[in-house]
Length: 264
Ligand code: NAP
Image (cartoon, rainbow, N blue to C red; front, side):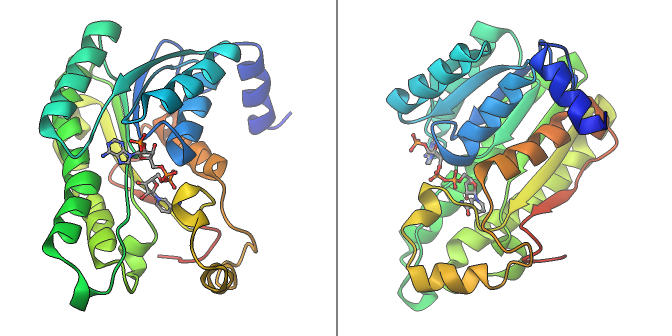
């Protein structure tokens, strides 16, 4: 039996394949797409997951899915563009679950447009949601990780942080900012047993990408050596690895999960 098979077999038996049993994980943007997939994956390995986003109805459905599979999940209202909402969400999670050991800063939005026509609000809103939100939520839960002397922070960046993308100056800047944030936090908290890494997805089939014009999607597919679009499960697998006890010596890293679309 190879390592993956034995992990799966252990997880199926409810044993601790990845060192997650009893860990508390907070995942933003957990109502759908990549965040939902990360929550399902971490819960399947035994973590208790705090699911946070704006849409409570969708979060409840994800929590029910996790509970039906034998996992533990709670839902929290969170708008990462609001400092107040971030503080009250962190407070509620800490009050209910006692600590946060894993934070996945996944919530994100796009508002594409060419630079010449981009309004300041389109730039600011994307930075505030995608980047400032990750910074503030980290600030709100880091003391808890420092007390435990164990923590994992994963920031969901993007391939466009490294390649740039016409029409996405705001989004690419926010995602490149997450890489700088990741490296700085990694340096600040390494001595406390806390690792901080980024995952840079390529083109992943979720609601965020489904409305792109077919011709644009086809031109992207032609640039992916693996020959398919990514799935939310591809990203969740990478996040789970970086959160695991086996990844303790990896910090400040950006893990490309893009089918070879960009090789940094
Ligand atoms: P998605 O399906 O659109 O999901 C986005 C999630 O973020 C939703 O759960 C949404 O929940 C949440 N969210 C948005 N604004 C929020 C806010 N202000 N406060 C709290 N939660 C908020 O997109 P996805 O593809 O799963 O994307 C997840 C992350 O991966 C994003 O950061 C995205 O930039 C990144 N990414 C995606 C791709 C891709 O190809 N799909 C590629 C690279 C990177 P509510 O609306 O309920 O709040």
